[in-house]
Image (cartoon, rainbow, N blue to C red; front, side, top):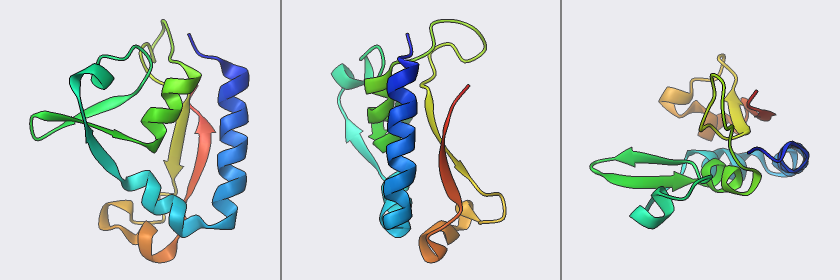
Length: 108
């Protein structure tokens, strides 16, 4: 179950801190680190797969704190998301060079 009050507090704080150093946050958003099966099996942490293993990033950990949706079209998803500006070429990692083009939102 999503703790919406906590999720909105985290989102507010993330956006505030990201304004202080957008380059640091852009880098943190794109980093994923290997993790074990135990973390991958955690009921609220958002973990992905890569090269046959599990990976986790900042948003996945924060969603572990705020919980995930129990039902509906976003069942299993976390409440916190980062949205990238389509004008910034995230695929080409322009977000690193421009240090802009993202904001944290509630994933409703």
